[in-house]
Length: 228
Image (cartoon, rainbow, N blue to C red):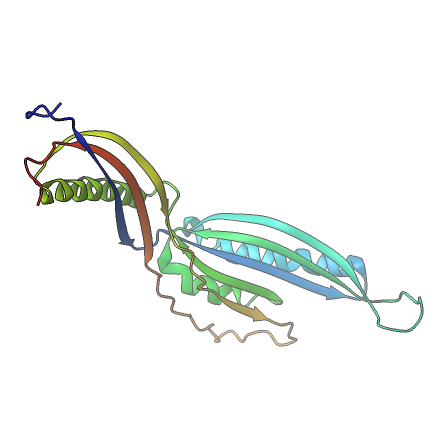
């Protein structure tokens, strides 16, 4: 009951917040490939290039937080012809990996170094916050405060005041997905880079992360003395 003896009214609002932050990690998808007339040769070439790829990644030390092998495939490619003649033209091999990089300062140099590995395809970058980043909490807190502020403004607008919170529901915190990626590939070559040749470093600018949070809240408010 309010001070005037009238039953309390209810105000329902939605609180929203948008927080911008620098990314904390960056992800890449990398595949190394091989092709040969013989299955064993294709597999051996694939293993060798994967070793080169792994060595290049590990040379960056703790800057690369995680390297994960996602899939290995070795398959025959048949010649196109008439009838049922199944002749193998090539054996192809593909090994796909995922990289998680925590030191964003080395990203451009890493991409350049991996592009020197024969038949290596690099896809990315995908900039991200860490799953437990405090930025998510900041967005949720701002959304809850926005709900209280909005409810108070509505109550004041009609001559009442907030009394108590009845319900507070989290309707979600999300980072909008962005399609920011490129692909770098190097084909097989009989020429190796000269000793004085340094691969060009691609300068990559981190993409700002936009985190959105929203809550729905129900409050009781005092009945206004008069309306109108």
